[in-house]
Image 1 (cartoon, rainbow, N blue to C red):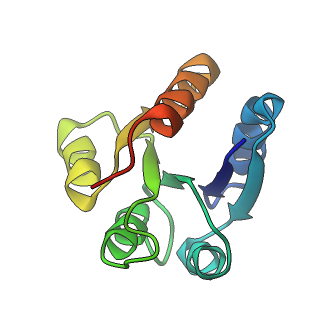
Image 2 (image 1 turned 135 degrees about the vertical axis):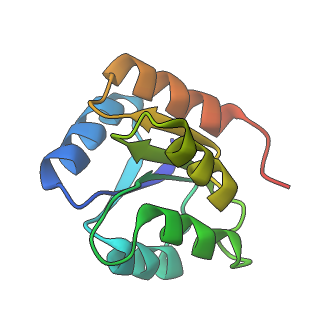
Length: 125
């Protein structure tokens, strides 16, 4: 069981991700924006964050960049969720510090595999 943060401005996406991954017994924390994500990251021990790239206000890229520059959150695994299959935008996610990405519309089997892979991989250096 892992503690997973899901950050997406669309409630239906947050709920779908939670539903798909709930069979594995994970604990979920949901945030509708970057500000809520930072509040959760300050108060909870999170092992994996699934972060939407394009959100109003604080973007997913900015969330990941801040996470990587904070000692408490720097080692959290991050999957960037994006509707953009443009190589430049995927590269930006990796440059910001994402460990992997998943494309929207979500492929639930692929999401489950990527989450399992991220959780099983060694801690970030």
